[in-house]
Length: 85
Image 1 (cartoon, helix red, strand yellow):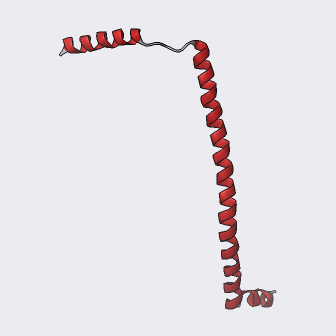
Image 2: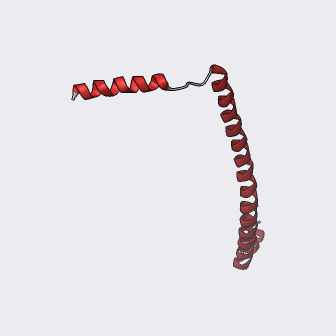
């Protein structure tokens, strides 16, 4: 069992020697690309979320608000408030 683990580690080290690692400049450039894309998508999704929230909740809120006022008026709530004063 121990021999298998040692053999695995040795093989892994040999394989890592064969890897072509990116240069420091390549790593820096690709990191900046990933950060830029992440920030751009975050801003875009945030704006889309705000826009859709404004549209949906504005429409639903307006509809529900209108229905609520009608229901309160039908129930005589506003007359009650006027008499209470």
